[in-house]
Amino acid sequence: MAVSVRLNDGFVKDAAVRAEAANRSIPKQIEYMAMVGQISIDNPDLSYEFINESLLAKAEMEKGVMTKYERRTKRK
Image (cartoon, rainbow, N blue to C red):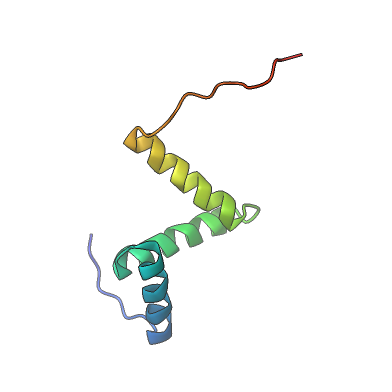
């Protein structure tokens, strides 16, 4: 469902800079920031790095871009 909202100009400018750095559109960047924010609210013990890597791993899994894990050391 699409909804129009008014956002602070400073927030939109910051989102625009981050969007360009991440090669996203401004609306997609704002969606990403909201998603990460909601995950952070729901899981305050998780770091941004963990959340970001988890989202990346989920996207890789959904796109089928995975390699099988192979243990490099012998178990004791």
